[in-house]
Amino acid sequence: MTTRTLAGFAAAYPELDYTAIDYEYLRAVSQELVPFGRHVGTRVTEISPERSVVEIPADGTVGNHIGTVHAGALFTAADIAGAAAFVGAAAERLYTIERLVLRGGTAAYRKPAQGRIRAIATVDLRELADILAATASARFELSGRALLLDDNEVLVAKFTFDYVCDVTIAETESA
Image 1 (cartoon, rainbow, N blue to C red):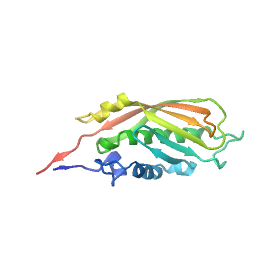
Image 2: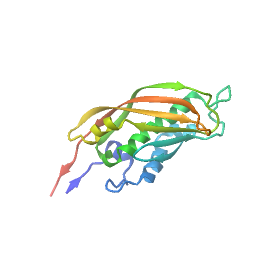
Image 3: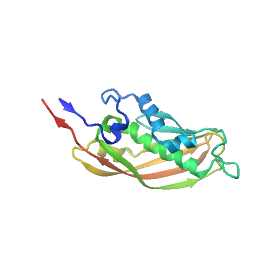
Image 4: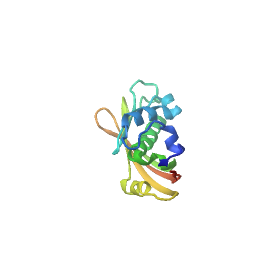
């Protein structure tokens, strides 16, 4: 029988059944993980193996002095969406993920962000494949991106992210 220690990402999702991934469970837990995201008012609305979506509501609390959504709120939504995209894509092996750390990123603000904004994020599937196939503890690099759209599907910002992902293979076999 294989037992798993709940550490790293797995500790954040203690009820996750790795044989039948419940993406709604991942979404609900992820919504509560980042206190600053709650402060800003972001909402994780979707996590799947392909992507995640995080919304900034159109309530005006994250505006700036010129009437658009503050760049910090846009970055916060993109950052949370990127991590959530990783959670969805790596769900079957979250028990091996010790940490995912944002190392760097770029932001390109394209149009004034007004109203409800959706950050739609993905991770690089080729790099993710190496992480999911790990058979020994190791550090990996992973790229991601988030596109931020307004309600008219206009691209208001684009973010690219560089992550470091530590995998810890800590399974113990017992009879």
